[in-house]
Image 1 (cartoon, rainbow, N blue to C red):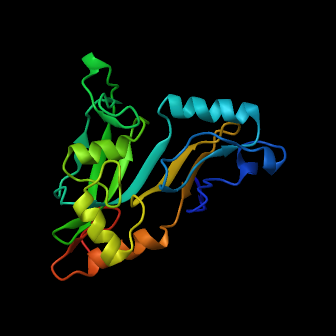
Image 2: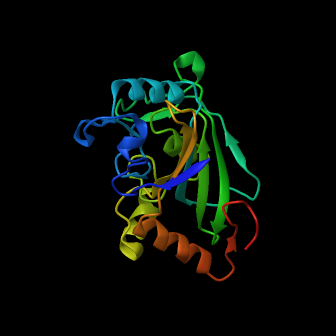
Image 3: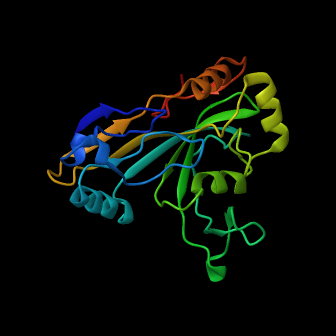
Length: 221
């Protein structure tokens, strides 16, 4: 398995040459991130590569791990969230938990706590489906809104975070992507380093007296 870094702010999960041939200026985005979300994103440099990688996403053969700062404590055990997601009937620009009988689509996320200071937590979120706004909707439904998220977050805590930590976006980051190369079948793994705002909040949480902290592998630090 080959590992390579990914650009966090720009969101490039792989040098375009990895996924096809041609001029870098003609690269095509294979998937997208929510507005304000940083991290790894995939580009293809040929139509064939785009079709093959898009098929991997559709078949759920891409591993996707995010990091987020949330309000609240998700608990020590991994939390699986399977609320179906659909269009919010009261605001068509947003998504919501909607029963499948009412048009909601199956969605699955697994949340793991990495650090908590009693009020805020750094969490990893692995998603197995790719519904619009999935992580943000799932975390809100569980009482764990993403800090800085104007659409799905807590207005009170967002205002406080803006005042005390200059938070001006949802603190959500596409941290890792993994999939098989569309031509060679080689397993690729890409990791986007944390942007400065999320890294600073994560460090603050870990350094708060009495905070609990785990490594990405789940071991106590």
